[in-house]
Length: 113
Image (cartoon, rainbow, N blue to C red):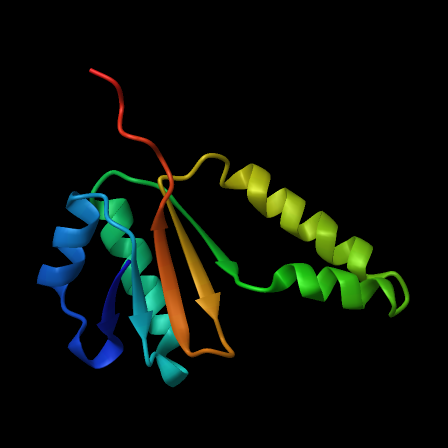
């Protein structure tokens, strides 16, 4: 998988990766996750593609929430609703707050000719 540091991220790189339907990681995002995700989403959608944004490791939130007054059920319901609203996206944007990175995965197979 291709990687790029947040400080080196530019529109030329993003356009190339999205146009060519490549997966990649943005490393060293730090406190700029929200801005970076917004830029990624805008670039993907401006190329006529769809995306789903999620937080990596959220399944752990469900499991731990089950232990705290049934919050896991609420979390699971929220995730299910989000997944339905963004069904079958071209890209998934995974935010990893612990590792300071964003993973951008192209999810659809090329159409057969």
